[in-house]
Length: 274
Image 1 (spheres, rainbow, N blue to C red):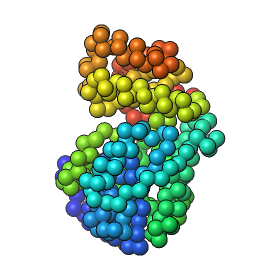
Image 2 (tube, rainbow, N blue to C red):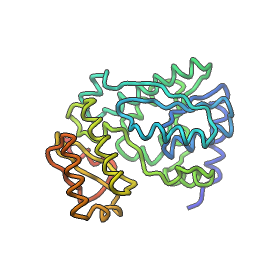
Image 3 (cartoon, helix red, strand yellow):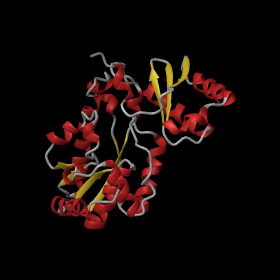
């Protein structure tokens, strides 16, 4: 697959027009936000600032990763604190949980933009995302001066990776990110303790085995481990499995299981009653 020139030109024109008075980019350090930040920095220079929201739902190791990628790009990088756990609509974990998270994030970033004397906020939703479960995009549509340049220019995830690679970004092949709340089935309350537990469980597994794609889903005390489909064989070792089970039970999990189908985005949607 090659990168469509007309899409890239449309993207650059959109960034130039909307960001001429300064833009804040919602920056997670993943491929979408990093590539967007790199293009914005190239076009707008100091009028583009990357902002990462640090919250209980954001994996600790990703904060350091975001710092490194921002430095790689050369863009100014700001950390701000948010706490979705103060919002009962988020904590009760409904199917549209991501809407409440996204709304709070974008509202916070709009305030940062105002403090900087900027006008707009960009975020990294792409065209491929919109084919899945993305209730958070409603917040983008509701808020003024908030835009999704990838959607506006018609970029798919694969096309963003191609552009990221062309720009020489280290994250061009980085697996998709998701907040820690995505490890808890809809309808089960989100608590700081559960977020800490799944975050630590994933760090433990990554220290034991070199998997790139990993989720530990917390089914009310049952840990369901998902790894990339081509990485499943890495866990097929009795001693390793015993050690993983032992360590995760120390965190409070009653049972430790492996999902035989491997990682798949939105797997917890199957827990919803239709």
